[in-house]
Image 1: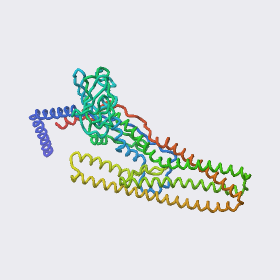
Image 2: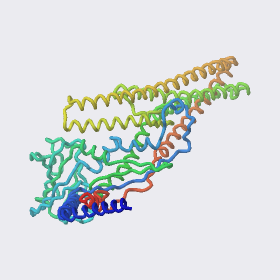
Image 3: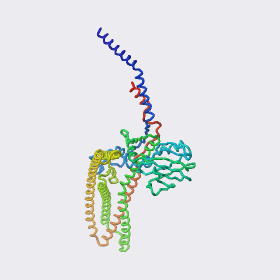
Image 4: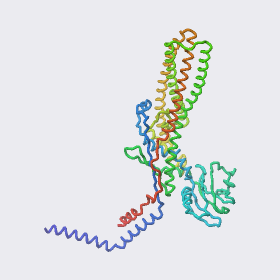
Length: 524
């Protein structure tokens, strides 16, 4: 009992001591809390807001995609995940460059000087300025900048657009060198990529637009760091997110990125089938010419030799041989596709050391290899990191040398995948060559039987066989070309935009309420 009272008294003393200390230092504690809240408040004010917008996309699964495809079987040692591959392709440099160029993300509007000398600081990306102008947020004396493209690789510099009478303009750089004179490219300055369309509703004489070009590598890296994708579980849907410090620009980046990504895929697929189109078009012209000659020869022979028919057995032999000729053409077409692709891969491997084999496959195939795509992403990240390092270090710095070694290693790994693909293509090509030889052997055997017929019948049968064979070849080639046309119209558009990005109402960061709460807790 006494022990329990002793413990209770000890607890009471401890609590009293704590309260006494707090009471003595209450002003210090309140000051710390107040300072923490003020610091959080200032952080909320001066921290640039971050906006986020997203586009919802869906990959359509085509009904004619087959898992038992021969090329898939040969390359089945690698994991395949089509949607993951698509998500990685969004952030390729090819796509990002087009976004930067279309939205002129490498341009910042610094200030506007009106004709009366009034200076207004803008400090906004071009897209944000254009949007605010459309919303009439600026005075009527401000210029409308319909387009201002200066090329991706213009070095960082400051420029002035000088308004002249009749809406003519001059553009000068910080050294007062003319870039554009009277709205036309000035010959002394390299500005072939510049496209400028600026106009004033009122008198433009004396007005100025000050803008700067940003470093391409910085813009590319910033864009890359602020784009990410998220797969919706157990669906073929993924969401594409974009972030920036400006609400409208964020929305435009997300929407343009989605469109440019889709267009980039279409361009890749067109490259994929252009070899087959050329091969078939060349053969189509050749077969059409041969068919016309065969029809003329047959008609002339029938009219001059007064013979129109052959016996039923010979007719069946002619049909059989024409079918063989048609099968031979199918084999030739497949073999031609593989040979074209083999040459393309081998040439690019010599030039670049590796090949993006996600599209360098015959027209009817699609190669989706997660390990391969992961390596491509590693390569992109390493190249971007190298660009960042070169902003601060020389090429001989150990960090740069290390990243160069990493890039070389990744390219070696990529080339190993390419060599596996080359081996697979060679196996298929050899198989098609063997089939071709067997068909030629059978054709030669049965052609000899036709030659045993009487001279007139043998000649007629030979002409009929040529005509039938070329007819079937011509029909086959037309069907093949139509299949490709359908593929170009349907398969190329297998990425659908379900929901476009909308302008965010409020930023996702900083979280002002949460920052103030953390500051209060920190003060305690």
